[in-house]
Each structure stands twice: as C-alpha cells, then as structure tokens.
Length: 186
Image 1 (cartoon, rainbow, N blue to C red):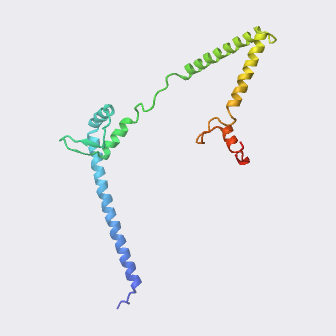
Image 2: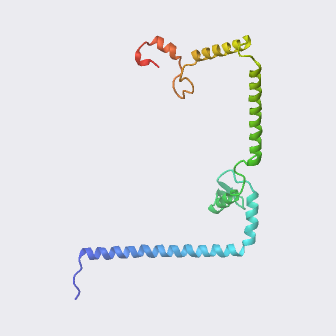
Image 3: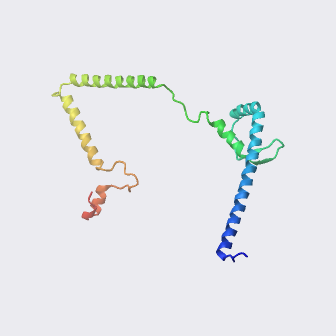
C-alpha cells in the first residue's frame, strides 16, 4: 500500500505538470515557426532571380507616402514587415547626406589662397602705415579720432552686456540711478 502524500507533494506535481504543458506548447510553436521558416527559405531559393529583379526595382522606386500600401487587387492595408524592410534596404546605399563639394586638396588650396590674400593685405597696411609719419597732423588726428570712438563705444556698451541669453534687457546705468540700493550694483 502506498503512503499518503502530503499537500505540498501534490502541489509540486501539479506545478511540474503545468510547466511541462507550457514547455510542450512552446516546443510545438517553435516547430511550427521552424517549418514556416523552412518553407520561406525554400521559396527564396527557387525564386532567387525574381527577387534580385524585385530588389533592383525597389531600389529605384520612391518610398510610399503613408504606412498603407495598395495590393495587386486594389485593396489597401497596413504595410507588411517585409515591405518595410525592403524599403529600408533600398535606402541603405542612397545619398542621404549631401556630398562634399570639394576634395581635401582643393580645400587646402582654397585656404592657402585666402591666407595669402590676408597676408598681402596686412603687408599693404603696414606699408601704408610706414609711409605716414607718426608725428604728422594726419596721424595724430587719426589716432585721436580712433581713441574718441573707442571711448564712446566703452561708454555706450556696459561691460558684460554682450550675448545675455535669456537675461532681461534693460539699461544698467538707468536702473542703478533709479535704484541706488547697493544690492543692485553691477
């Protein structure tokens, strides 16, 4: 005669049987998927030349405007995953970014030409400055005018008032005159 089993043994048996049923179901699903994949691979092997022609046609066809496609019989429906994948594959080697307009050598030549122009202009300016006597009235007047313009600029533009980002825009000097509080000194 068999010994009576406890509730824990019975629950464990039920758990193991349920786990086995789940594993069997997964195995059958995997087997079904493997058969479908095998059919697809066999179909691809027999129609390899047709697929190559389709891929070249797809590469030259513009992508659809929406996620829906029309089928051969005129019905529309959501795009199938293999259709979306073929669209993505067709875009792989297309020109997604703008190509460079010049080679590195051409760019280097261009930069050298610009550098030579800047150097020539600076030499011309130095030659003009050498011609002018620093003690002459014209030179003194030019230097005085330059200094005055700089002083005017410094008075108009407060230090730190350049690119303020999101700071409020107001006249700092006027604000200080209106609010003599030392907390508002800049």
